[in-house]
Image 1: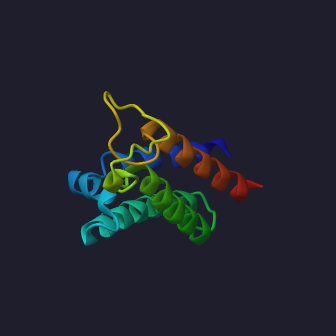
Image 2: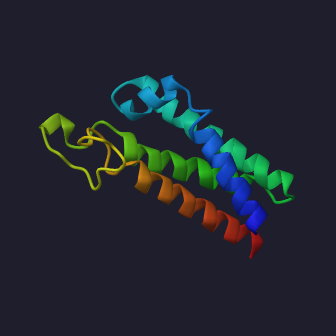
Length: 132
């Protein structure tokens, strides 16, 4: 269990930082505003899912369900964190947290701390389901 969880966390941070290029990071919040936003967010989620799938397959577990779980949840969680449309078009300030930002948050419902906590919770649940 602990090996699986540590491998998940390592794969997650590799996918979230070194494997998330500047283009993806800048454009994934443009979902529903520009086509590139949907593609960048989806590519980012699939990179996460691929690494999670590789981790579970390398440890001898079936990979399809974890791949799908990580792909869908990562897409939804990052959508909530990065979408530029929450209240912006109406001049509203709809944010649940300020995250780790130095100044006021300009997009999304929550910041990076909540985002990462949600991703870790998903990985923990997937690991528990696989080993129990």
